[in-house]
Image (tube, rainbow, N blue to C red; front, side):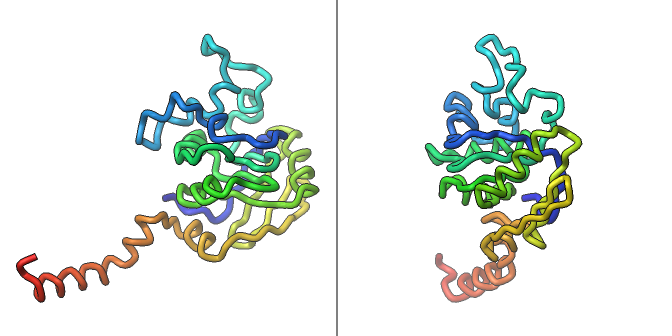
Length: 201
């Protein structure tokens, strides 16, 4: 998993509540177990017409936001089914952080396991960042996980809180496998000892 320490990028404003996982990546794209390629279908039913042409007024289709790395959204982001494909699709598109007033619990935890930083902030702060993001590609937002701050394009800084363990994992690029591999020496030692004590196993 890629480390997350500090990110400065374009933020796409999505002033919607209850953006669910089926909106993020519709069910017909869940046939794969690969994490790559899903970005092409991120928000598919919102981004594309039935004939595959782009819906021009959808935020991620606008020139200013095609390379967005941050999403600013309303409450209850990631609700619905618990599909891990949702953070996979966001990450494959290039989204590294989502700022909202609240998140669905399973989606929230899946983000951390896949290198996306979900940031919970008060409604007034989200509204201010939403307004900032609406200025387009020149309004770049900085997310600093070490300092636990979000800085708007006008220099206004807003603090946020994140669980210390999740923060450690994100900053060091540790998913569940990475955490296990940190104990590789202890695991090898145990296996060697077990093999000596129980050679028949």
